[in-house]
Structures are given as C-alpha cells and as structure tokens.
Length: 530
Image 1 (cartoon, rainbow, N blue to C red):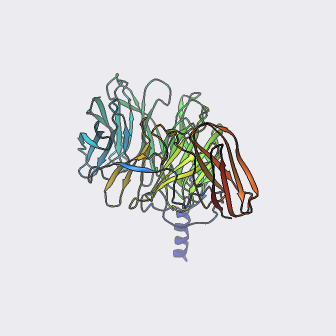
Image 2 (image 1 turned 135 degrees about the horizontal axis):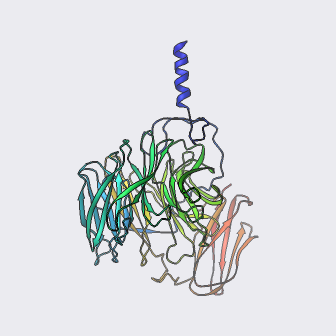
Image 3 (image 1 turned 120 degrees about the vertical axis):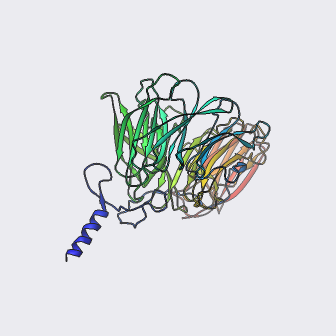
C-alpha cells in the first residue's frame, strides 16, 4: 500500500504546478522538452478548449513567388538559433551576423556592391569561453552613435557580448559582462529605454531547462564606454522558450518585454509582460489570460491598420498546430483576439514572425517560420489574413528566425535554418515580379488570377490586375448562372487589387467569378468545400 501511495504522490506532483504565478495549483502536465521546440513531450490531459480555426491552405499554388538570392556556404554558420540582417555600418549594402558552435566564432558578412547575390566575410571574433552564441540584436546602448551587435550565450555561460561598428566594415569587440550564473542560456535579447530616463538598457531573457530569468542591464558609464548595471531581475515560473518580444503592445507609450514560457499547447495562453510603471517607479510583471489556446514563442508589435494603434502578433503552438494570433489591447492589461492563423498540417511551433508592407501593396504581409522548417506569408486584406506563399523545401527543423529584408529597391526575406547535427544555413530570397507586371509594379494587361486558396472554406482571395483606371465589376455566380454576390462595382485605379470573398452562408459546390471592365471580361471557377 505504501508503494501505491508513493506512486500516487509522484503522479500528482508531476501533473500540478502554479503555471500562472497566482498561488493556485493548475492541474496540467509537467515534463521535459525533449526536442527543443518548447512543447512538453508527455500526453494530452484532456479538457482542450475548442477554438475557431482560420486554417492554413493546403493549396500549393501560391500567389507570391520568391527566388533564391543567397545561401551561406557550408560551415559558415552552425547552430543557427538566431541571425541578424540589416545595415550595420550605415552604407547601402546589407550586412549579416551569425556564428559557429565549433569553433566558437562570431562572423559578419557584407553584400557585394557589384553582385547583390553575393556576400563576403568582413569580420571574425573568437569566443574564448567556447560554446555557442544565442540571441542577437542591434542597437546603440552606450550613446556614442555607433551601432552595436549584441548577443548572449545560449548554453549557460551567462555572458553578453558586444561588437561595435567603428566604420566601413570595421568592428571591435567591447568588454563582455556576466550574469550571475544559474546554468541558463540566453533565449531573447533586446535594447530600449523602458523607464524613459535617457539611458539605454540591454534586456536578456534566459532559461532553457527548469527555470528562467529576465535581467535588465542599464548603461551606467560615460558615453562610449560599455559599463552596465543590473537594475531589475524577474524569475520566471518555468523555463523561457523562444525569442519573446519587445514593444508597446498596449499603446500607453511605455515599451514592454514579452515572454514566452515552455508548457502545454492545449490550454489557454498567458500573455506575460514586464513594463515600467511610472506611478511606482518600478518594473512590474503583468499577466493576462488571453482568449486563445497554446504556448507562445515569439511576439511582434506592429501597427496593422496604420492608424496609430499597435497590434500584438504572437506565434506559437496551439494544440499541435503552428499558430499565429493577433491581439489588440482593449484596456489595462487586457487584450482581445482579432484574428488567428492555424497551420493544421504543421504540427509544431511557429517560432518567428515579421510584418512589412511590400512594394505595390497598401496592406502589410505577415512572414512566419516554423520549427518544422516551413515558411509562410499571409497578405492582410484589411479585414483578414490570406495565405499567398509557403516554402516547404527545407530538410527538417528548424526555422528559428525570419526577417523581411530592410531594402527599398526590392522585396525579399531572410531566414535561418538549423538542422539536428549542429549544422545550419542562412538564406535570402528575393520576391519575383508576377508575369505581366512591369518593373515599377504596374500591370501590363488586364488579368484575373485564380482564387487562393482553392478549394476553400469559408473565405478565399481574388486578385486582379488593371493596366489603367477602369470601371470594374467583379461578380460571383452559382453553377446555374444565378448572381450570388456583387463584390465590386465601381471605378478603380490602375494596379493590383485584392478582394476577399466570404462564403460562410453558402452551400458547398462549384462557383464562378467574373471580372468585367470596359475592355475585358474574364471568368474563373472556384470550389467551396463544406
């Protein structure tokens, strides 16, 4: 009997913990993250919370197309937990920063002026302590006007490294500083002035096994010297997973650090933030139980509607689906869900995202990367997100970082890929102009695209091209030729136009949509699945 009681005690301990730091024990699973994807590898305890699904499409005929611009040579980067792209030395050529695990080195590459599809190494630094680097960010924390590449250990040595740009392709290693060691590695790193005192901070999210910390280090030396003082520490209730995020998600004028913690992806999500409270002159940890399911991995703060109100993008795993949720603050420490993207064919964690308005578009496009080595883009229509690209060609896990290229002359994206054998590669892709589009993004002729996704349920996206201002009619008909809905009936300017067709109240079957202008009429078929 005593053995039975012991087993029952152990099981009860493994299935309960205070996950939201409320003092209330939550009956949930607790175990180890076996493959580093942030998901506890155990079993489903039931009580799953149902949720409306904005499914990713299974149609592999995307609207956008990208061609390879550059791929890092074999061995250039390994253990690609993070990577950085931007204009580090303030010229017109892209720079890339990354590292290798063995030997422990940090590298900086720059784009060739004569060949934009070629990058050459311009700087190299040896990590004397060994081990791997982890998260990377860019900023000027010492106030001297020179950009710094800032990174942290990923394997628990607990150091922060700063490489400052001193001029064209000239970089110098600044003195490192060390966290109190708790055997936890860096997961996310950011810079900012969270308390609005004019001094920049370095914020490090650490924690890879049983626990974690958020440490905020503030510049405390004279301008140009790398002297920092720790001004805040928050100890997390479980281990930190993913990059987290940074920005003013509640639109109150104060930036926040957003945290992703490992756990079970079948229960409600907690949005955890650290923000400076001006009334008490102290940093505070805030937690909100969001109307969503799953564990968060990364966050992005972005003004989706270009109206001065920022939204919060959260990637993660939702009930074994790679997911992205979009929230908008609707009160003090309160958020409403405004949309969700759930890739039902991708059963792991969405690790990273970025948002940008691409050339020729009036609405932003969302870029996503998953642990299963998949990349997706979703075009925002003004009311919903429609998938228009996916890249499923990577040999396995994991896409840990994605960025839109910060270029003005063309669109493209950057991503890291890290395999299971300490290998890794950086990729750059450039967006192709659609056939029939001039170099200034003006259509050369009228054209109606196949709707995407197709088949669909309950909504699909219709794109058409106008070479000049035209009187446009876009209508949907059923198989008998009866008019179902008039989507557009107005004068429109030349360009690329997107219309979302919502068919939630229509029966499944074959439908036709017709674009009619003064000079052209074109019809295509689409299939609604119910």
